Image (cartoon, rainbow, N blue to C red):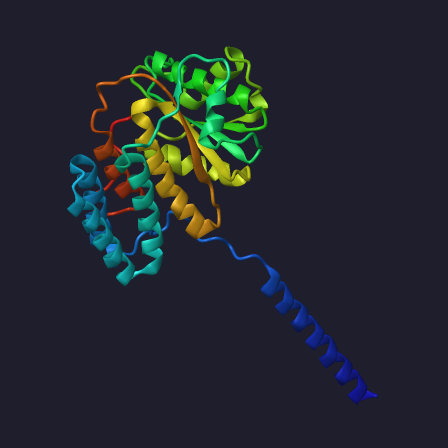
Length: 303
């Protein structure tokens, strides 16, 4: 009788152990934080070199610059294949938006519905987001350029009624004692002035730079199950914004399994003399996102 009791206890213990192992194996793994040490220290100089050569290629468009970019990528791959995945995604998108002379911007000219976006591959789907980038407030109020971006976003939202909108931008600008945010002001404008349903609009009120726009927005996109996106901003800011969002997107794809593709662009056609060197700012802010020595997101111009 005693032996039978011991055998039963051992059997029950074995069952409990097997169940515990099954739970441990089946429990989903916590994704690696996307912005934790994005690039290995051993590759920091190589990736900095790549960014500098991407900038140089845009400014000179010489054949040897293209060859140097490939050499940079090969050097990065020789050190760390994961770094190479990030660097390759950055370089490929840079070639698309900055180096391809045939890259076309889809411009907003006051139309009620942005039907032209269909020609750029945008589809009406709840898994698509129009990401509307902020612009610095003046005395706590929206400036005309930010209103133009919102008007463009409203035209896009009317043409694609199943999509969501994500507005990003914090409490910027001098003389803003009430702490009005770009994103909060944009949502109010889109709902009250443009008639867009508030339930479609998600906001990030913390970002203070375009780079922080990208980082914070991707958390919203991930939670909402978004798979494709169109950036809505000013024409001079479109390539810059895409370069940053693509870099953050590459990190989220690798580290968190969140794959969001930039499939379209939509821009209000405005000029802004403050931001003539958008390619230089983009490179500096990508370096900040990747936490490279000498890079940084703060203290850079805020469009």
